Image (cartoon, rainbow, N blue to C red; front, top):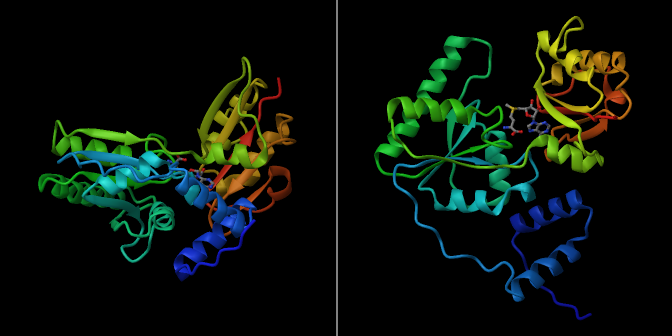
Length: 290
Ligand SMILES: C[S@@+](CC[C@H](N)C(=O)[O-])C[C@H]1O[C@@H](n2cnc3c(N)ncnc32)[C@H](O)[C@@H]1O
């Protein structure tokens, strides 16, 4: 081994330290891997692709860790003339923007403000505003990349935006770039097999009726021991989800991932954390056992 000293900028040093912590590898080991890939030609930058004027691309940026952003996603945002991201306030970076900022801090992101509260009129008006802006960008000939947490085809605002754009601009080419979903990261982090052999797999959004005891969708899904059940959007209802798991004899082995890849992240057994609500970004896996 030979020693080499290099100066690296503060921002890169911070991101290197964060990656080392997340991956449980030393900074030196990460640097050796990166330099090795560079000199052996593995990561040579490919020539930039040309944007397609007037095309809308939904880009999944993964659940949180910047190293789960795919090469295709990175190419799509670099190719696009305009990159937009959902946010709850024009002055606050949303989750998708934060992920992209860590992976590619040079990419400029425009925020589109969405309303998450129950007020349907406010939600519809914010969505219409976002669609207006995307249409405006497409009309001046930009390729627009709409970045979104996880995958753009699973519970994402991208579907509503794409539908709104197609209403206003029929024939707009729409493309999606898949992203790693939170339950996949949770399965990897907790060593959980999602399905094997003849087992099936179901993703369920939690709400008061789906997690309610009598006849709720969660209780019905858990009754099939050969079906792995993933519960999304269940942060507020962790206690009710745990009750249903216990009644079905499936509390043991059920895991929860909260804020995966983000500050405050937690991966735990549901049984250990059921007493208190978790944040909105929480996913539960109840693995099949037959
Ligand atoms: C509006 S949906 C977005 C889903 C996203 N499009 C995907 O493909 O994963 C939000 C739900 O996704 C799950 N989720 C997304 N990112 C997560 C993360 N980093 N940690 C835990 N759960 C997450 C949670 O169940 C959350 O309530």
